[in-house]
Image 1 (tube, rainbow, N blue to C red):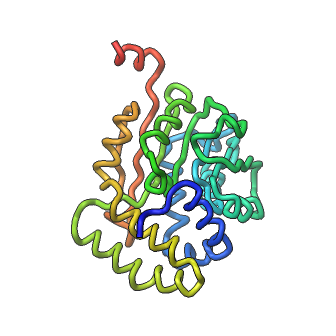
Image 2: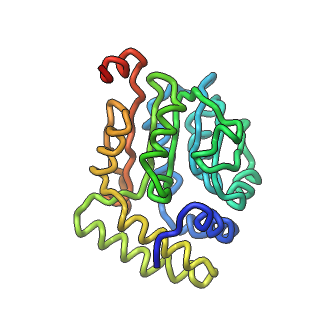
Length: 245
């Protein structure tokens, strides 16, 4: 089965939206790990006066992590799936959040404009047809010295970690998703991780997109070697100009 992309993937997430949080609840530490990655942006708390963009917010788990870590920030949360956004908007939010239905490449048409102080992208890049284009968009939307955090299933490259990922998907996630009628989406998600960048490759991809101070940081628990945070910073305008000479 080929990976789902663009409109087909958004439609699959639309269909799975009502069950999505149920499956996330079976992932121990999911929300804790998102908050850890949000803290790794390194922004001052409570974030008053900061503009933060949550790319691929889904049902709002990543947005909730940002709101918990930066309750004073102005958060814009974007997703290509209308069904997932409806679930996110129905949550109770402790601070104002603007939800926008749009793919990354059409954010300007949807009224989303920079500069932002930070971009957070959780479980997004491996689900896009062109991850480099997404990173380029994020780079353009950031202010100089703006922060990027990519929270992603990116395997370490060690066979043991690949085996754990396959065992969790084959033994738990796929059987439950199939019973719920969402098998095609979760088969895609399983394969999207297996065929995507390793953590080291993802870090190099972020560097190639023009970010500086890039670090690849592991996450603890069963996701060790499976999920990583890649953080970076947009250079100052002067530094970018000097690098281009």
